[in-house]
Length: 217
Image 1 (cartoon, rainbow, N blue to C red):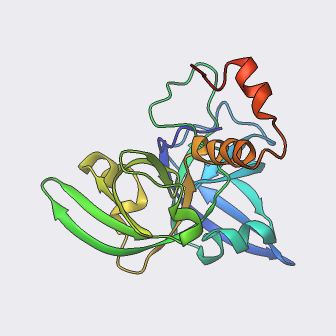
Image 2: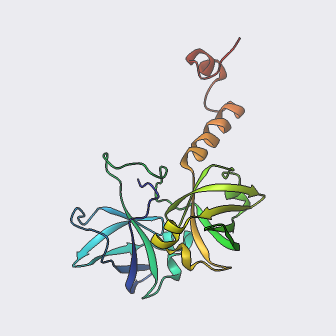
Image 3: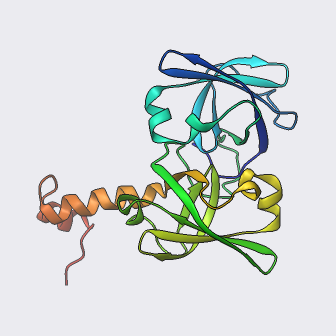
């Protein structure tokens, strides 16, 4: 699990093809790896990946063909910059929101403008993902926890404050940039729960009433 608070920006040192998969070598002078071991998880642009090897100022990860299909990691090349966050600890402050690192899909930047000291950016997602988005709800964009300003059909907007612009790769976004999106995990569980109770396929309504999940007068 992660919080969506980016700890450092890293750079792709090399990309090696291993059949249908890729091995990425990522370097960072600012991400401390003293508490990281092979087998630990690090989110790279919001994608939870396993550290394979530790290097002096970086690490290696393997990216499966399934992950390449579902995310933007297939577009990375040597020199690309990426957002990095180590998996949270029980003592970690939850400054963003609960993020699993399991990307739901890809969004595209469709508009961007200056809004005070912030940058307002509009992203377009698929209709399938749009139903999980709500104004003032949370969304994870390339591993960055953000609050949604508004949702208009399949387009949602966020404001990027100067600090976030400086500490992440979002400042490099342009029209047409594709980004990884993870919707709020609570929305997914809520959809599942509501779907089951409405169809009465797995949970009997009487059971829910007797257990207190459904209140009756």
